[in-house]
Image 1 (cartoon, chains in turn red, cyan):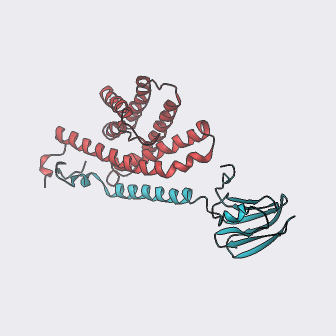
Image 2 (cartoon, rainbow over the protein chains, first blue to last red):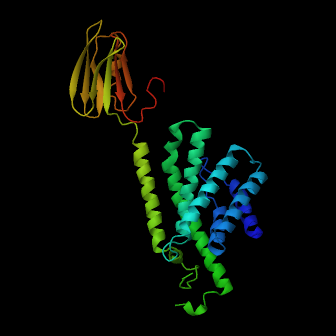
Image 3 (cartoon, helix red, strand yellow):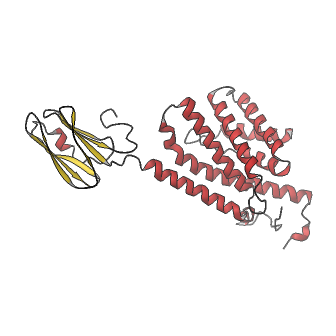
Length: 167
Length: 135
């Protein structure tokens, strides 16, 4: 668990070094780790990793208790709530990609709501909603695919699905 | 996982990572994006006009039907012309003709003022959170 949290923290710090065209639009690579933890161990563990990451990464980046930290925390909490819901979806139909996209939407929703209430008391923030939505779909898809690929690799390494399933 | 054991190295193999519901979720997400884009970025479309003379509302009209409004002022008659989706000051007795030369106005919040004749034309609409003067 600690190893997963460490991986998530490293990803969020590394991500902070990537220049981005728009404030607020981030790939959220650390969420790959959280999706893997969710699929392998469950929601409680994913929540631990997610919140640990928010606190540790903000301390490392000097963002602790700054506005960015609260936005990050709000996004993480909303995502976890969304994941609590989506992890009840039938596994046969909905994989990590679905979880990822739902969580990404919850994330931007919470961040926009907090930003509107607290940082930008003006409806102008909603003007950016379509952009954030597009980012949520795009990065949600990419992160979900990455998580699904990692899970597949992990399963193959452990050999839990027997090699006999090879076509 | 019910994977088919395909290695991910081959091109296009990522597709096996998507389950049927995932496609649906991604498409629904895109639909939400498109809907929010249409809903939020269509703002600024004007749907009505307010004509003021000497500071008081002289006439209010929708932008859906063509119409001419003659507005009397201290210098004479200012003529407002409305067409579907746009409006302009067609003629004005003022000396500098600024409001006439602004031409057709089509965005919510756009304003033409014929100051000498004390007539103004304002376009109204949803999402008119600034007017062209203050902006």
